[in-house]
Image (cartoon, rainbow, N blue to C red; front, side):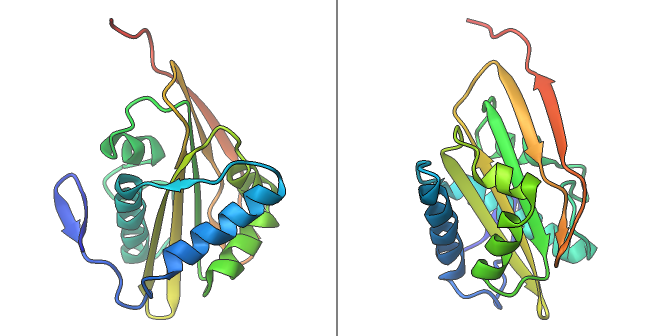
Length: 177
């Protein structure tokens, strides 16, 4: 299978077993269930964008919400077909070996935990890519369409170091009928 963004194709990482994204989703949904929040549903188009972003981060050798061509979480959601979601949450990480390790790190970081527990999010895309032993993780979570989009971007999570949390409000303007 190949992932794409803007028509460019990229192969999945050969170092990532096929069950890792599903194990990650299971861990995230188990955590959400402990807070009585509905499960997230895996969305293939969001997975394609999350995977592409993980590959880009690996190629750049850095954890960032912004890709080499200027793409950001809003761009990734738009390309996946979500032109006006109410909320977009993105968590990224670098260097964690297992789904349990990266989810535990996100649990222990207030901004990342806030994203995982966002009640209005119903869909998720998961991307994982490895360069050698270093894995790059991307989660994109979205809610249903609305007139205003809020992007919740947790700072990159480098092993155990957490950077600042950013909240951006982007007004989409009036809808045409």
